[in-house]
Length: 450
Image (cartoon, rainbow, N blue to C red; front, side, top):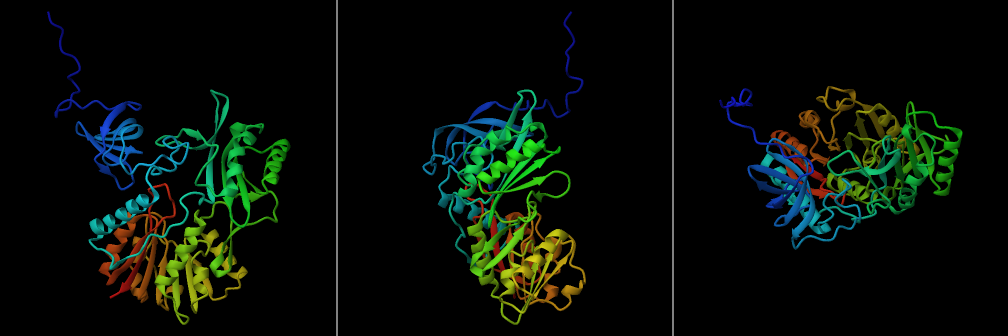
């Protein structure tokens, strides 16, 4: 007698489910076009593949990083037929390190990709195009990054300390001996860091390391257990050799080993010095940051008798240069420690026409004391989530000009819909190439009241 059929009891009514593609599987693909994040897009057997390191028109072999539903994420393992645009990857760790995902594109093509991404968001989400496109703001494509977080993890099974950057599409750590996008003062520290950390007595208690280069060079070590005197001596000797400050982050806030030491960076065109501490937000690209501040001031065109509002002010990166040009700057930030630091920066630079306030900028602007007099112009530089609740009330402040600095074109376009509804027109827009070799897009937009 035939055996009864098995496995049908739990079959979905719509038919059998397609087998999921296993991680690690290799597949030959033809890339149709590029996605907004710079990955190649291919279509095969009803699935959409997003392939890191692939260009439109190429035939590649891709390794699966993950799959869910009909979407497969993969990375390029081999190129059978290369695009004319492809260049040799400048970094030896390309394809493994997750940091620089479009370095196989020439820099001018990277800028063009970012420009298309911004234009598409404005068109698709907001249904607008700026009256004028500004040229991209860019600086050197390598040696620009003045801050970096280095991953550190103890592999108990292999009894080995892993030091480097996160791998593409996983939590694995890629050992890095040289990183072309780091500023030159951090390169020797990066190359010697793994060997120094391996000498410490409790590698399993190490967290991450952060490197900083500004008015001083600094190394911050995150540790989950107290450091021995011998370990502290090793760290201090390493930093002394590299003429770097040593900061430690155990319990509480990061602290310098030498309490008299401070970190900071200069805004040279305005003769300003801004202090910061590890954990504070600072732009990692110093040259593009200065160009960005200069362009924001040019577009906003602040006048000597005006009162200007700076939202999401951080350490005062925009507020302090603005204060040199206007009657008063009111600067607002959500993080109380940053508000205090910005106020200290204003005082240390002898700027007394600035006022700093803490407020939850994810909520609508309330009838705060600092908002009652209104403003001639507004500058805002929100996080990736954008500033939707804030922009809903901007017209009520009376501002005729608004400069919006964005690190996410999607939320900029979303907020543009609201600004247009309030009677602002998109006068000018352009990209800021803050992160060359990546698909990350920063942008600036000028809005004027109709």
